[in-house]
Structures are given as C-alpha cells and as structure tokens.
Image (cartoon, rainbow, N blue to C red; front, side, top):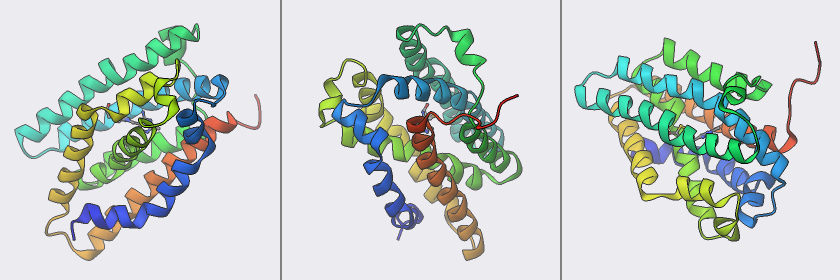
Length: 223
Ligand SMILES: Cc1ncc(C[n+]2csc(CCO)c2C)c(N)n1
C-alpha cells in the first residue's frame, strides 16, 4: 500500500465530517451566509501569508534542483494566483489589500499556521510535506465535490469552487501526494508514525478552520 493510501484511510472519518460541515455544504448549496465567507476570506489570506513560507522552506530543504524549482513555483503561484483570488473577493467586500495583510489572525488561524511553521522549520522535508499535504489534498477533494453542485454557478462561490476543482490544481495535489510517497520510502515505522501524526494534526486543523469561519470565532476576551 502506498503511504498516501495509508494516510487517506486514516483521515477518512475527518474528511467525511468536513464535507458534511455546514460551511462546506453551504458553499455547495449556495446558501452560505456571505458574512461567514467574508470572515473566511480574510482569515484565509492571513493563513496563506504563512503557508507560502512553507514552500520557501521546502525549497531550502529540497535535495534536488527539480523539487527546489517546484517549491519556488508554488510560492510564486500562491502569492500571485491563489492570493489574487482572495484580493479580488476582498474588493467585492470593499476590503483593501492592506487591510487583508494587517488583519488580526483568529486563534485557530494562529494555532494552525504556527504548528505548520514549527514542523517545517524544525523537521525533515518529509515532515514539512506531511504538514502541507492535507491543505492541498482536502481542498482538491472539496473542490471536485462542490463542482457538481449548485454553488458552482453561484455569483459568489463559483470562482472559489472553480479554482480548487481545476485540472491544474489537481496536478498540484497529485504532485504533492507523489512527493509524500517518495519521501516515505525506506523510512522506519517510527518515522512513518510521526509523519502520520503530523498529517492527522493538519487535517484536524483544516476541519477547525471551517468551524472557525462558520462561527466567526475571534478571541473570546478583549484587550
Ligand atoms: C485553510 C486553508 N487550507 C488549504 C488551502 C488551500 N491551499 C493553500 S496553499 C495551496 C497551494 C497552492 O497555492 C492551497 C491549495 C487554503 N487556501 N486554506
């Protein structure tokens, strides 16, 4: 069994709950409240600023030029394509790029990005890939599922669904899955368990991120 198949089997119950979560279902049905989507967009932009740094660290840790180039390209496309989608959405909500960049991260955003940065700064390349893989893989799964639903024609949610269900995005997710398998080759069971633990944690954080957006959950105490 490929290591990625083992990971997939392990997190299947979490992915099922993610697909059934009201935020995700609401985008698919086109019934999600726009205020919740607005909150998500701002937090996701803050998230992506840190997430993009994982690609930079991937380029540093890569042991061949081809992988290094791929991480560099991913850093570029995250900032210029994926985050451009967010900037365009923000414009519709009358939020400026400066406001996006300086938005305060919600507790879940902060916990998630800092966990990933901790793993990627202190761990191996395999650990870094285990941390970032659920982001790509789960968005591709969600994108594909929503692409056949009414939300795919919704005036607000169609662009989001289109981006994450695109063939180009699928290739990216597949590249990352294959890289995980390659890096797992020859690893001891203890090392594989560590990779699995990281993969499960970021999968859980993906679920929490939808939950945070649905609840618009900021800090419950104020300065
Ligand atoms: C919470 C959260 N998780 C995953 C993604 C998806 N994503 C983040 S970076 C990247 C790679 C290509 O730029 C993809 C697909 C997101 N936007 N927000």
